[in-house]
Amino acid sequence: MAVTAFLPHLPEISTKFPHVAIIGVGDEGNDIVSRVFENGASGAQCIAVNINEDPLVRVYCHEKIVIESQATDDSEPSRWGEPEGKIIRACAESIGPSLAGADVAFIIVESGEARTRAVASATAEVARRSDALAVGVAIMPPFFERERRLAACHELASMRRSCHTLAIVDPSRAIALPAYLPNLCDDPSERLVVDMVAGLSETLACPSILNIDFAAFRGLITHGGIAHIGIARSSSALRVEEATAGALRGPLLYDNIAQSQGALVNVRGDVTLTNEEAERAAELVAERAGSPMPVVVGAHADDSWYDGCQVSVWLTGGRYPYIPGGYRRLPLDMYEMEPDEEEGPIDLDLDLDQLEEA
Image (cartoon, rainbow, N blue to C red; front, side):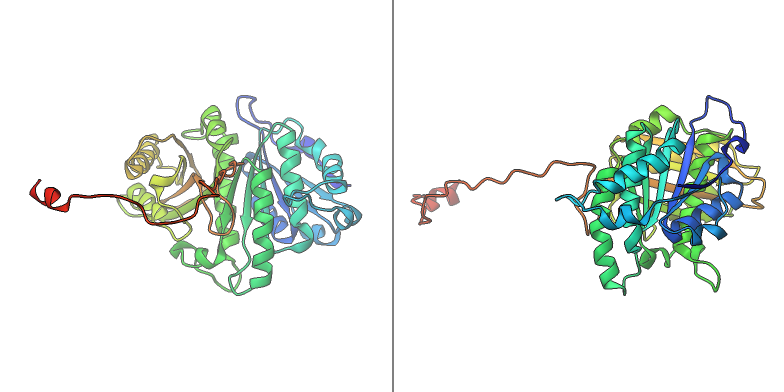
């Protein structure tokens, strides 16, 4: 059920740019979409999805969608934890029309919200079936909430199967980012996701200094699997070099960059940001990788920035400690070698004296 829909008032953007949708699922996902919308929507279609209408009242976005609670209550997960039955049909009927023509869909959810976990996976599945690149962004519960964190890990496995690429944000690690130190009215993980998703959306869907090549972006994201993210800012004389180095050694990166299959580099800065600086950031990432891998880069200048720049890096093809890694990676077949043979000493005659003389 659509609560509001005023999509004709979206800004007209040239057809050469991809159509980007940002979907916030659940209370925290709705808050993030609302903040992106209030900051200018970044050329994207902002959609808030929830199972209750009351939380959507305070949300600012292009469209608000309510998934009937009966669908989430009666839906049974499959043996792999994937959503099935009523919840898929409900999301397809409610969200599917809003994603018509979308090229990229960011699905943002806080994995600790029990009632909306299945909705997020179903939304990603609907986006993927609509021929859109489904990019999931899952925020983990705090480390001390063990029960919610354990339940979230099960949902991450389902999200990974439904999304082309899934980025995981851990608040326990995000709090260590110098640029995102918490204060009384700001959550570091929420602010991080707003910056990352809004930055990618504007570089994809708006005229920028260096727009992300969509064909290269599709090739990188289609089989991206688990994505680890890094972000840093700098206003020094060597701002790009310093911000890139900070992003690559950030606490959110679980894997070494050499173990990644590709990198997405996005640079945001003030009006003095140049194309050469963006290319320099991509060169630094490629040099740090130490092996040939695709690096996609984009850059966008923001009038609201007074000084400095921000570099965000998405490393695809990574692993996560709590779920199997890789996009739809097939499990390895295990074979028991010679199961009927009994173990015993191996009859080997070694001439040790001859070995020493050699």
